[in-house]
Image 1 (cartoon, rainbow, N blue to C red):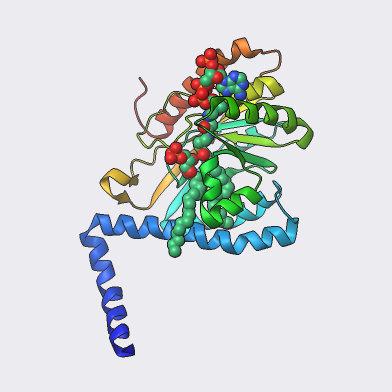
Image 2 (cartoon, rainbow, N blue to C red):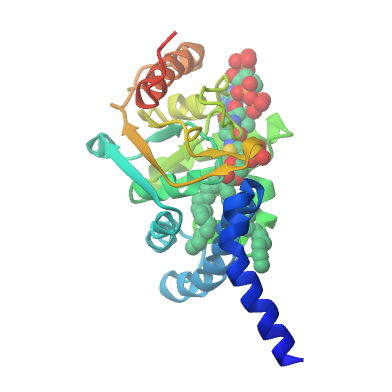
Length: 267
Ligand SMILES: CCCCC/C=C\C/C=C\CCCCCCCC(=O)SCCNC(=O)CCNC(=O)[C@H](O)C(C)(C)COP(=O)(O)OP(=O)(O)OC[C@H]1O[C@@H](n2cnc3c(N)ncnc32)[C@H](O)[C@@H]1OP(=O)(O)O
Ligand SMILES: CCCCCCCC/C=C\CCCCCCCC(=O)OC[C@@H](O)COP(=O)(O)O
């Protein structure tokens, strides 16, 4: 019996590289499956450490999470080329907004995440097993995208507490993943919070993943991701009447940067 399993295991190990070469679908499934497995296992191992070191749900756990997640890029041959980190050095809280292409964004997020920064995430993530636990412990703010009123209430609360807690809040204004190489129209919540809290908006742009990652084409290879942190956009003196213009300005700046970083001609 054992010999049978041994032979079977050896055959799979020998065949795997061939299978991965022959079938992009196998290669994609194995790589993305390994990514989920890393999430799942590392979350299970990191949660007790967060509880031991920091005692519970606190943004301080993001330092531990960041240290672990920053190692993931080496497993997938991904490199980050970062510019503008000095733009995070604003006095006090800020709203950070970035484009959102894929679950791989978690590596890009942790590559540049400043201290004392929590993220806004869809509440469904709370139920993602051990990952839900670790993002809860990291202080992630959960919103119900299906209920604008409740999401607005949560965001209004964020606007009130981010000053006292002195935290930055990272929001993906597209509101969903989008791996097309362009930006979806921006939701306005992040910009309402920035104006309500009178804190700057700091745009962050990641170059397009399409050269190395496309689930529809079973493409997932190694690659370089350019990241640019843009200068903060002040909101002091702005009111809710200015939110649409602020959103549009941020959208245009980020879209032009996305095209530049991705080597795509601007429109
Ligand atoms: C150790 C191993 C670890 C392994 C794990 C590794 C890493 C994980 C660890 C940590 C990191 C976790 C990070 C998780 C990130 C997850 C990211 C996501 O889930 S993205 C999806 C969720 N995010 C969002 O949706 C944010 C963007 N959405 C918004 O801000 C929306 O505006 C909204 C608040 C949800 C409302 O949604 P709606 O569709 O109604 O959007 P509109 O913007 O069109 O608003 C309609 C209307 O309301 C006005 N409005 C909006 N917001 C507000 C507000 N806050 N106050 C007042 N008014 C508001 C808006 O202006 C519109 O009105 P009008 O058209 O008249 O202007
Ligand atoms: C033994 C194998 C174990 C594997 C079991 C898997 C257990 C769960 C593992 C990983 C869960 C993935 C969630 C990690 C957080 C990723 C953040 C993210 O990118 O979420 C997507 C969200 O922004 C937008 O969602 P939509 O694009 O609107 O949809």
